[in-house]
Length: 122
Image (cartoon, rainbow, N blue to C red):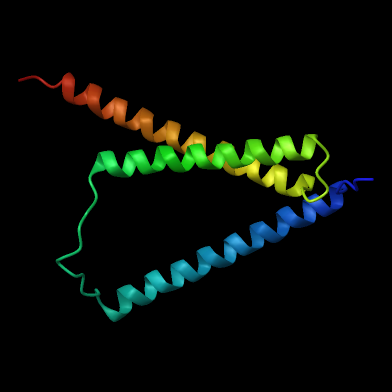
């Protein structure tokens, strides 16, 4: 028989993830402040910068991968796989939703920038 996670376990897991995210943000902020205090770090000039289309393509591929993983987890859970619990399914679904929404916002901004450029007087 497959045991399903109860709501308290799910909420506890979400709280733990939120706490970890907040700690990571604090660490990043501390490093950012420390970098400003220590002065700018030297950047290697030979570092290649990817093109916008490459970055956008990678973002679309990453969103697709996240959505595929969420779909696979959901299907496995629905089929009764004992190794997949509802917590993992819900977290994967939320990651998928957030990544798709972020990609949609980027697309909207790109379209808006294109429209602004096209509406500029010559």
